[in-house]
Image (cartoon, rainbow, N blue to C red; front, side, top):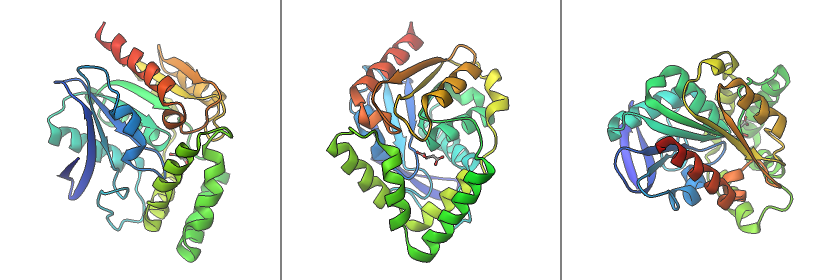
Amino acid sequence: MGRTRVRGIELEWSEGGAGGGDVVLFLHGFPFDRTLWAPQLAALPAGWRGVAPDLRGFGGSDRPAERAYPMEQHAADMVALLDALGVERAVVCGLSMGGYIALALQRAAPARVRALVLADTRAEPDTAEARAQRAEQAAAIERDGAGAFLEGMLPKLLADGAPAEVRTAVQRMMHGTAPETLVRALHGLAERPDARPALPAIAVPTLVIGGSEDRITPPDVLRALADAIPGARLELIDGVGHVANLEAERAFNDALHAFLQALRD
Ligand code: MLT
């Protein structure tokens, strides 16, 4: 585990693998933390180093009292973390909110991105309806606590047949997220911009990956994302929901490793 001060806050991160300059930066989704990526950090191919931070507000990282945690701010934190770790360019792998942040990082600092892995994510902004729902959810959490919000979210996250230990791991991450972080993240998610205009200019190898049973970012959304990025590959994992890397860690790792290997060929 590491703890590094960047942009006025302390970020905690886990590390896996070994190796020199070949780094994968893993960005977790909402409302998770860096332990989301434990199965990937534990099984990186030889020569690759993985870094999985807790994003601002999450896990063991600082939780500055800000109204919102915008995607651009997380992306700036990640560039600062790469600076602090002496990493020039990384493969950036983000799941869902982590994918929104990966795209924000790509827009803000394309020279720092060697390749993209976009898992169970989308480029579209929230609809007006989704924004209104997030505002209601944030208000309800402030008023009544996080219980009802988290209970309502869990069934949308996992495929019906998801293993019990995956369900437990997801619940632990969700319930470990501070209510004030949920509120600030909901505002940041609702305010994220439309990432679609920048997709045709992405010039790094890109893997779009996700579950065929994902209810939050279904296959059509993933297909549209892959179609809009020049040369991107789409990998759908059968029978798996929104947390594909945990629900099907073997299939996810196989696809990730093949992608990383191809970067070296
Ligand atoms: C996530 O998994 O990060 C969230 O589902 C993202 C979102 O709510 O848009």
